[in-house]
Picture 1: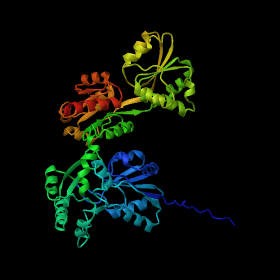
Picture 2: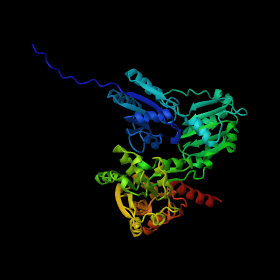
Picture 3: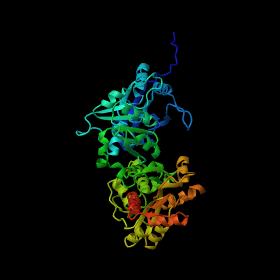
Picture 4: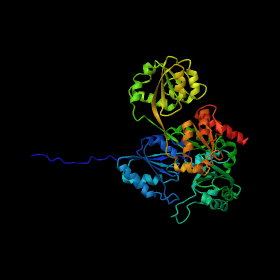
Length: 519
C-alpha cells in the first residue's frame, strides 16, 4: 500500500505591528527605538503630519494615511487603517504604523492597539515626543515653573463630533493651578478663549499659539485671552497648531532659542543625489532651515565592474592613487571590500584627494591623504602633485564624466596615468514635481550647488517660470569657484560662494549673507 502524497501550503507566521510615535515634526526627535523599528519594517503606514525624512530610516514600502477627505483626494478612514495593519501582519510582514507625536496622546493609537489585540496580532507601542512638550520647548516656554505653574493639563480642542455635548468642564479648567495646552484648537480658538473667560479665567491671561511646532516654518503668536483670536486671525496662522494658556508664556522671551537660529524659516534646496542628501538636510535643520530635496543628478555603480576589478588586482603596481570625489572613494574601496580585500592592499601607494570632504571620506576607511591641495579644484591638485609624480604610476578613480584638466596636467608632469570609472554621474530627467512648483512660486530662499555637474543639470531642469525667480527671490550658493564658473556659463547667477569647499562651507556662506542682510 502506497501512501498518497498531499500538497500543503506552508503556514505563514503572523507578523508584528509597531505603533511608533514619530514626534512633532523635527526628524531629530524620533526615538532610537522608533528608528530601530523603521529599520526592521517591511511596510510603513504613516500619518500626514509625519516628516517624510523619517522614512529614510526604512527601505520598506510606505503608504501615507489620513482619516478624512482633503484637497489632495481621498484619505484612508481609521477602520480601513486598522484592517490594513491586520491584513499585512497576517501576511507575515513587520509593519510600522508611524504616528505624529505620541500614539496615545490625542492620536488614535489606542484604538489601533485594541483592534490588533482583538485580531490576535502581536504589537508594540513606541512612545514619541508629544507636540505639547516639544512645542513649548521650541518656543521657549516652560510648561511648569516654580513661580508660575505647578501643573500642566493637555486638552483636546477638537472633540469627537458624535458627542452630544462637550466633556470639557471650563469652570474646572479656569480654576486649574497651572498651564493649559489645547491640541487642535486653532479653529475653535475664539470659543475656547471666551469659555475660559466666562468661567472666571482672567481675560489678561497670556496665551501663545504655535503652528508647525519644531519645524523650520514654525510660527508663534502671543496675546491674551481677550485678544488672541483676533491676533491669530490677523497673522494668518494655519493648523497644525497648539494653544498654550498660562503665566508661563511670559517667560518665552527669556528662553527662546529655536527661532534665533541663523537660517530659521528659510527654504533651502539641496541638490545632492537623493540617497546622499541626509547629512546636508540634517545640517539645514540644525541651522533652522527647511531642506527641500532637489536631486539634479544620480550616482550609479558601473554596469560592468571588469575594468575596476582588473585595477584592484594590480593595486601594488601604483605609486599614487587619486580621488576627486567622495563617491570615487566609496566606489573603489567599497568594491575592494566586496571582493574580499581591504585597505592593506593600498600599502604601496601614496594617496591624494582633491579636497577636505573627499579626504574625510577616505578617513572613514582609516586612511589619511598624503596630499590635499589648498583649493578644491583639479588645477590645484595637479600643481601639488606635479613635482611628485614624474616617472610614477598613478591611478585616478573617477566618475564617468568630468573635466580633463587633471589627466592633461599629470601627463605633462611625466606621470604614467591610468583612469578607471568607479561610478556613473547621470542627469535626472526632471525635478520632483512638488519641489519644482515651489521654485516656480518663488518659495525657495536658496538653492545650494555642490558641483559643476549639478549646476549644469539644474539649469537644464528649470522651467521658464522657475528661472524667473532664480537670482532674485531664490538665490544660489556655490561650493567652489569651479562650480561658480559652471553656473555662470549656463546663466545661473551666484549670490554666495563658499570659502571652504564643503557643504558646511556652503551653509556658512549663506549664514554670512543672511546676517549681513539683517544688520
